[in-house]
Length: 216
Image (cartoon, rainbow, N blue to C red; front, side, top):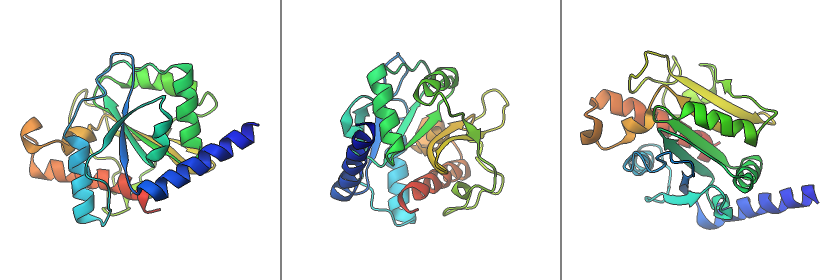
């Protein structure tokens, strides 16, 4: 029965991909954290990718709750915030099945999210650990070259940026970007007053992530 359920979800995921095309979902979660932060970030990233790397992603990302079976419509989910994150047992099960069935989740810590999301990831995958991606990982050279790995977009605690991942059968299924603030760099220029160079680095790294998911 377990294998049958897994197959059903896998077929649902693949069917939704070909029916709906390239789409991005923004993950809405409970716990009090601001899942809605950086509202202009993902639309700007989508526009950049469609104009520069040949993707055909639907312009407007859709908000989807963690426990909604509709997450299988989206090959790529994005999640961000500053604070607390809480997943229910049903949400944990839904997200785990989504990721093991071919989905991808990018979590961008907007500063302060890390201790909470790590606790929830341990519940989703108790037998898997976040692993730091080496500079030679292909995600850093998809469309744009980042020989030093994940770029630093905003400074908070003087810590180096880290790209951390969870793998399943050698496939990267979840990417956690920490101490980088990529999403801030994707926002409209007037939001953070970042330099053009800083915004470009953030958008290019985001495009690499998108390319890794949609083009590989």
